[in-house]
Amino acid sequence: MIRKNAYLSLLAVAMCVGCGPRDKKPMETPKDELVHRLFTYAEEGKIAYGHQDDLFYGHNWLVTDAENDPLERSDVKDVTGKYPVILGCDLGGIELGADENLDGVPFDLMRRAAQKQVERGGIVTFSWHPRNPLTGGDAWDVSSDQVVKSILKGGEKEREFRTWLSRVADFLESIGPDVPVVFRPWHENIGSWFWWGGKLCSAQEYQELYRHTWLYLTKDRGLTNILWCYSPNGDIKPEEYMSRYPGDEFVDILGVDSYEYVGNGTVADASARFKGELRRILTFLTALSYEHNKLMCLSETGYEGIKYPTWWTEILEPAVREYPISYLLTWRNAHDKPEHFYAAWKGFEYEADMKAFSELDNILFLD
Ligand code: BMA
Image (cartoon, rainbow, N blue to C red; front, top):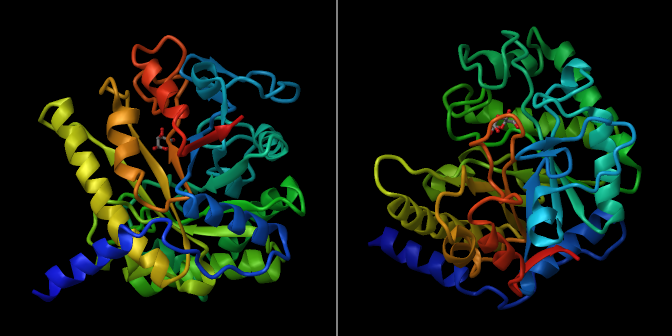
């Protein structure tokens, strides 16, 4: 009974989109301005569209001249005529001092793209799939549950991890002193597919990791223009969402990563299931965002290969429209894996539906 009542009250909060502004800080810094801009989207029932790696490559093309490329090509622009408001980038590999990230994107190109995106009036968000500092494997190496412990205070990799953080800080700083960006470290932390995942460290260790990252960048390096996004994976219960939350002081945006998967049933079944699941998640996320006075977003989403002809207008948009998410971001269009794409591209059989999505009043692109 209590559970049912709690659910109903969550639903009530969720249905109150546009029902009143949240407490906003006065706008004193570029970060405050971006927070204000994103809150305003949510209050007006608008959702900004984002795409991972949008300017670096697409379904069948790739920037090859990293130094001189004008950064004008985009699958999203090819289809809709407009760039996404949000450019997603991944820092994986920067921790080792590499020139390129884990998907082959040169960091110099990423820096220029971030600057260009902001010049165009857009926003940049960074995820990070760092290598495994203990085993030397990648972010998905979950062979040890001692990794987070090893980089915290007193751990054998503490010093090395500080160097890793310093490289992240150097890069973010190099974008420009007054450019606010969204940083989304240690994502999908309830599942156990990354070395910082649910079964790989205790809640306390996870929280220490997040706070340590925040403290280093904010206090030691003075990077105060970062909006911090906390983004668990989606297929979870409401109480799991907050079970590893680092605390209000360390977070600006409550995000969630939620994808559609086909599984054994039909594409139509999967799409209906995804729509229901997304609403369930965004309902509790809305309640939490009001309770904690935080922005919210759908930090990663999509349907690999977009197999439903009207996925954008009949599945995604109806699933999100009632919720005050400031933005949503669909994942990357890999240039070297033909099935791995999450935005339409010129020539894709269902491209018209993404164009229709881009023309909806409540969905924002860069004009
Ligand atoms: C995953 C896939 C991988 C990629 C990683 C980081 O979801 O797209 O191919 O390396 O994200 O971008």
